[in-house]
Length: 311
Image (cartoon, rainbow, N blue to C red; front, side):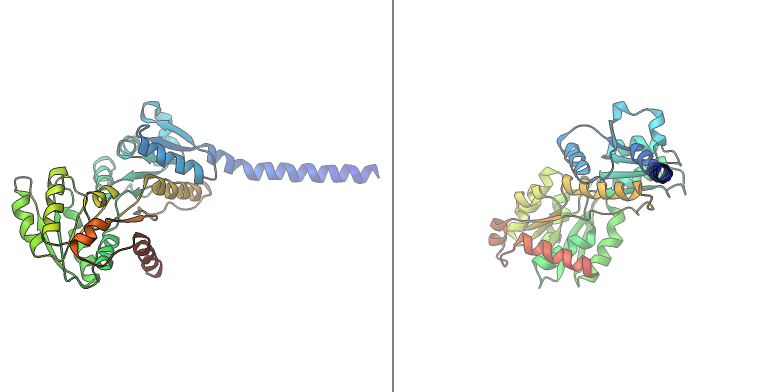
């Protein structure tokens, strides 16, 4: 009987040791994951809160002033915001897998070209804060099913979006009316004929074109000519756009946590991506003023989600 107990004890001990050995790499990998925040502003804190809500494994969290040289060797690094992304790209180590999140796609591409040698992008990816053009253009079609002409404007920071705009407009059967604005141009003079001849106007997130003053003027002129504006933020909708599609800090944080979970479990680094989760907002006053059919933000979001799932 005592011999049986000894055998049983050895078996239990062996199983326990095997289990501990099997779990150790996962624990070590989880401990070596690092989240770097640009600062502790409310938006970054919202991203961080969502990461903590959805992450499976614990992560270290640092701000830029706390980052040391050795931190750039962490196996998995999530840099939240433009400044965090820039710092970690400056210190990029090829043994790490770096994800920049909560920053514009154009900014990420600029930083990558500036700070990384050509061909060393394999272990660097991103989750953008801006929406894919195809999603914005689909929303325009849903807002005005019978529209024929889609107007928009590009500036120095968004010229690389030209091909995407043309492809998206063609996919939704729009004739695209587009103007490219240089810094010396008078934006009011250049934009006025585009708005007057469009059925819808799509606002591209480019600060070189749409500062606050120009945005106010654009929204006023669009209401005057009964041309619905499709924006890219909740604030654009509140200011007078008929509808906008946008992703919150919490939604970006949720997707960031999902990527962390995958990487910590040994999956390959996903390709750079636009937000998976998004909301649609509608301005009912603008919709009534424009004389278009009443719009439901929930229904528009549901339709967009279904279209992307089917695609």
